[in-house]
Length: 161
Image (cartoon, rainbow, N blue to C red):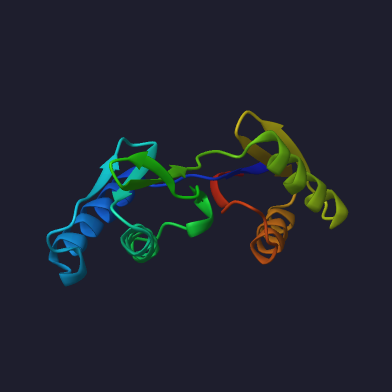
């Protein structure tokens, strides 16, 4: 039986690089000169802190563009609304979504079954394992999933024959 795994992962080194690039850009921008802002990063979420609506939205836009340029899919970022944190400051929390949750895994499995491709799909923790006797069926399944729109980005790994 040939198989592959469907996962949703973020390269944390690329995310770290994107955060550092966003910090550099914000420090060099004229509209941030003399204002209070901060970009916090703890490997699971990003905190953007700024003094007004314009600056907090500008920081969010900078962060999204840097993540995109580093090859991180924007749909893997869960961006919350700005909230006041005192002292005229606002904060946006951006959570990095890793893994496929049960709800999205069920959607992926249902889409595969509805496509009537001769493969078997089963949920294993935060991955979906797809197996078949035919490698061509697995390739067909991959191309089908690439064409579909899900709430999270999907990657394929561990192709075995």
